[in-house]
Image 1 (cartoon, helix red, strand yellow):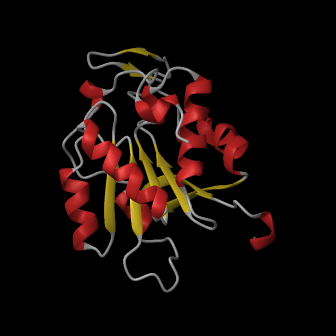
Image 2 (spheres, rainbow, N blue to C red):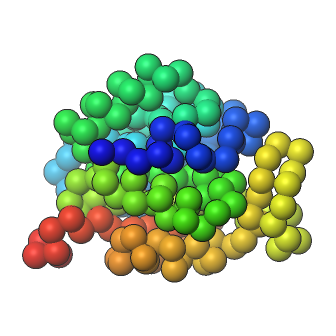
Length: 186
């Protein structure tokens, strides 16, 4: 069962932080191994305004499912989650989401819920906006920013996934987590 963060009850409202742009996380998808899967399912957790990424996924052979309690209609979110419960995603993207969540426990909750949605051996890939270089977390004109580098989120990811690395693709640095629901299949 999904917890409170995916339903948006306590997640910081990120409606104003959503941007209508093609996210860099798309570069991470090009280096993942999906084996014989012909149309991998992408679960875009905290998708914001997903039109450009959705179109990119569809143009590049992925089935796209976007979820965001602050930027997507409730029915869209419900249908997305129901479909993915029956057919878990091959990869979950968390793009510029953790950096707008102030509370560590809330970020852990989002990561755990991403894990709950996944299939064994699937991936969770994460990018963050590190901020303006000030390293001072705080309010912005659109909400909250942690302003922490990607590496600052590694311990939280390891707490949830264990199998975590930082990787690079086309100049984009991202965290790659492999989901092992059944440890004997590693």
